[in-house]
Image: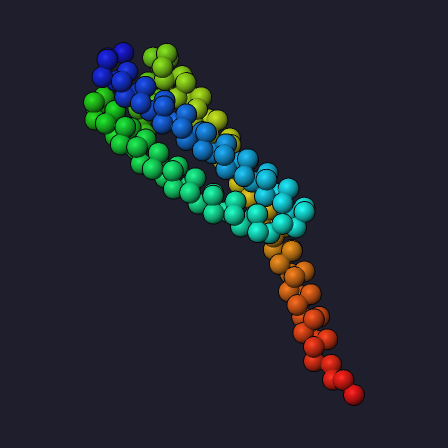
Length: 146
């Protein structure tokens, strides 16, 4: 493998490692949110959602870097960006880790999505309960004292 391609692969590997770490942080926050949901600590859940937004911004920046590296690789190799991994997998070595990291990220995001769906459903249920409680309190407030 050419030295310039190796350099880009090393950079790509590092950025995918970084992305996986941030996705793992999101997963950890998600399980923390579930814990706080059980204890009905909504304030902590909202704090974690704010942290999630910061993490997602970091992931977006990493994705931007990854896109630039992949474009540079495709230009050097004379291939379409989506074809570079198919071509590079045949060479093994450094590329194997990139492919493995991409698979790990994909699996972690699938898990995160499932956890997020569950949490959203639970939050919606809690929200409905809260609304019903508010409605009951409002009805009590409308009672007239004779």
